[in-house]
Image 1 (cartoon, rainbow, N blue to C red):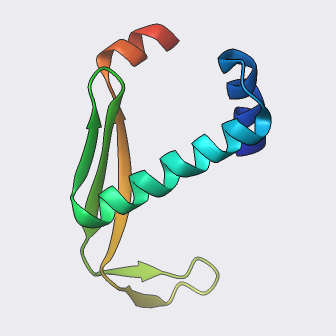
Image 2 (image 1 turned 180 degrees about the vertical axis):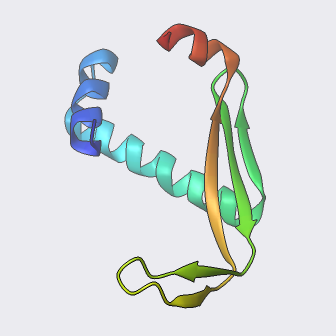
Length: 90
């Protein structure tokens, strides 16, 4: 499901317009991004945890020519679903 379909589904379930659903979705994403910039994790009890992790510098390989190249240190965001949401989707 992409963002557009998610917004449409959110407007149907919530009984709000797609414009409002889009605004709320964007606000959630922007707020989550700002919180992850400031802290290392954001936890929603029963839903899950978003966590910023640092991937250390390592050597990568170009699959076309097999040459090694350095991959610089960078951040990634991981999401771990909570138990209650995992039970709901199974």
